[in-house]
Amino acid sequence: NNVRYIKDCSSYNSFSKFNYWSEIQAIVDGVNIAKGKVVIGTTTESSAEPYSRITDGDINYVYYATPSSASINQCVTVDLGNTYDLDEIAIWQHFKDPRSFYDNVTYVSSNNSTWKEVINEAAIQTSNGRRINAYTDTYNGYAQDGLVLWYDGYANTGHTRSNSSTTWKDLSGTGNDVTVSGATWYHNYLYFDGVDDYAYKTSGAIYNITNEHTIEVLFQPARIPTDYQVIFNTTNVGTAVMQYGSLWFNSSQYLSYQNADGYSTRISQGLTLLETDLGRYFLMTNIRDNRDYYVYNKGYFIDDYHRRVSWDARTPNEAIYIGGVSAGKYSFQGKIYSIRVYNRALIEEEVLHNYLYDKQTFNIE
Image 1 (spheres, one colour):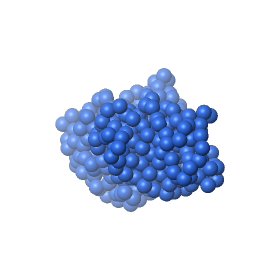
Image 2 (cartoon, one colour):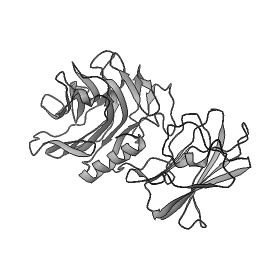
Image 3 (cartoon, one colour):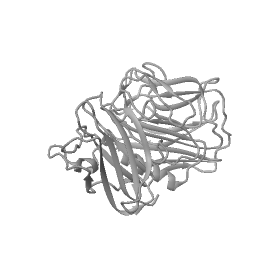
Image 4 (cartoon, helix red, strand yellow):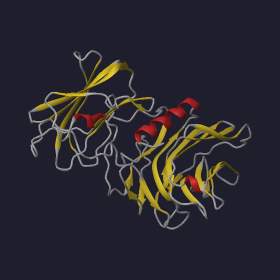
């Protein structure tokens, strides 16, 4: 992890006779420290597609950077300026031609001479691009310990994405995939129209949650609610009562986590949505630490229910509902970028860290 240089090599492309790069990011505590750094290539850059695009920080820019001439194998190197213990290296590759093939090899070095290979893979790449972690081939920028559910707006089918997928893949490995009904995929989020869109797993969700757990949802509302809207809902299938922590809007524009015992008792913690909040991003974090509940927004504390939780968490056969509980019932209008559930209580530093990582990953404020 004593990294100063990142070198990414791509093999000759038989379709258009060029190697392509789009973006290289080096993430430390949610910050892309590669942004704006100088990129040097094995071959002179193309004047029309300069290497500066590789570290411009704009992962939404679909046009690539290329060398001035083709070869069997070419590389680009980014000098970070100092050595770092990186959380993640993200390699984004965008192509205008979805048939394009690449054999991507990424290396790291502290001295620009002794290199360690951290990823080596051959794959078909689509125009959507993807995120790769060069150390584990998974995403590790977020707190990982105890992560038991994770939906990501980029990698909606696993390591890659599909704009036509009717499944939102659970990246935690627990297997809590949900079925998408009506909602529309965009570059890095799932959009719900507020009419009849939702995503669901009607039974069998597994969390292993106890009296310590954390739920985080990154989203962007599109309308002031005049009725109830479900953003993320965990439900006791047997009693149909929300439990653990379900994120809702109520008819009074109150955005809150409703925490219940799985039967009838519940508390609500949150904040009031204002007209000026439309289009803004929320990362609402709900934490239970034994008898205490805490709520954060974008890494900062907003509410608690301290030392007053009398009931224990229950773990029955669970259901998950996102953006509504059926077509046209409690329908949310807006964008959902990421959902994470932990079977432990994150500490305040981890809550802030996850927000900083979301901020960098999804290019939000």
